[in-house]
Image (cartoon, rainbow, N blue to C red; front, side, top):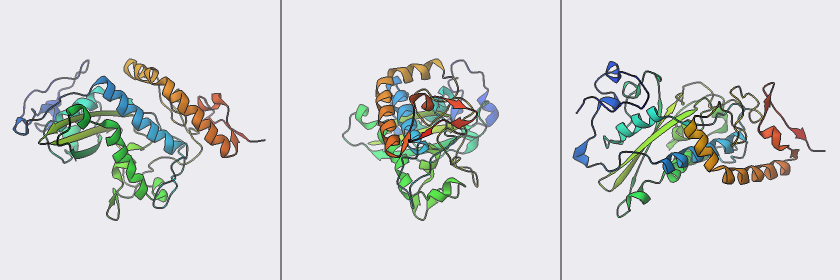
Length: 287
């Protein structure tokens, strides 16, 4: 069933111009009795923090897995921030209870012409809905495909699969130029379906997943204040609130990272994790 979908708060976009099958034009599929039509504030925080921790791990060169590994560090990995429009698109598609990607036209908006997407479905029989909708576990499932990702593919995206093993969910999670994410989820028929939309889109054929190099050495949007090795612009109020509320845990993580960096024979000053000067990641070799 199609019709006028709810508009995004503060946004002016006529989604009908993208066709009747655009996700924002489709009513929920009530034949599958979907439960949950929103993502809570706590879940938004969990989605952002989990994604950015994974991206930071790769950017800092701490990911040792791969086929072969380890994964190289990233010079241009951006911090993800939340986008309500991407989230409404993701929720609208999740409400169809279909474990399949919608086409690009279904995801098109006035702001984003091409949007990336990750999906996951799992059995949640006998689970309470609060237990069934587990976003950190979902993001970790996508990221775990790093175990099958050849480190040489970082230089040029090659395929969504390495043989029979999927790698495309991982590459979308860590695609350097992606800086926006919005997600939705439903439970139906003892299953939970998770959808995340990403802009700009990742997994572009023959393009680099990210630029190899010293962490944040190619940052142009400014350094992240909360995730060493990532860069981003000024956060919106929501993202600032989410980051501040998780600051204590992130600060502890920074100290852990500093210790690991010292083990690797580099002495890093704290300020170097928060500055980009002349497009150079500041560091000092150990003396």
